[in-house]
Length: 169
Image 1 (cartoon, rainbow, N blue to C red):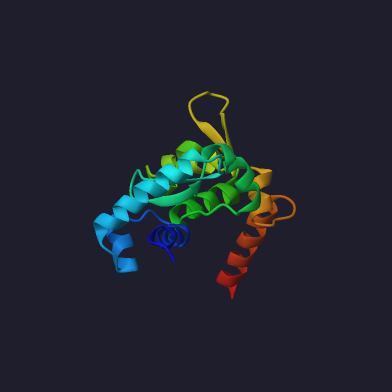
Image 2: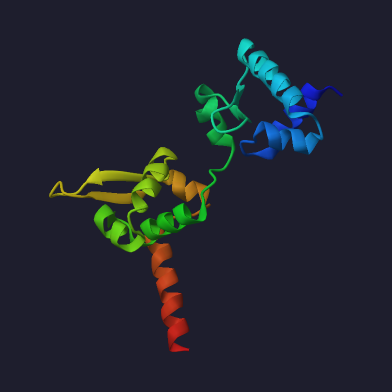
């Protein structure tokens, strides 16, 4: 088992960018040796026509090259952080919803969430009649991701009915 293969295994499993020091600590190896092997590994990956690359922007991580992302996204479910998921749930339950209204509910961070959701294809955005705000709606990819059948407004009504019946009890 070579140091290079050990580093490759660490990068493959971590799922997040790791520093040279973190990798060296995990492997109980010298940081300078780890860094030298990392640089060789980066060169090796970049020299072959592989779908994988080692990104070193904010630490080191093995990832799928940009040109292969569309293929991978068809196979791997989209991962959403809890705040983005909460924003998406508001859009789904209140759709169509004006972006300005969503900002009032979720705050200014909603703009970043909207950008991420648009990029992942889970929502659409179009100008409203006045051209002053945007209207947000979920997409078929949203329904597919959450394995929903039918209209999300029906889901909103069901949830609202459950909430109403809980209050009455």
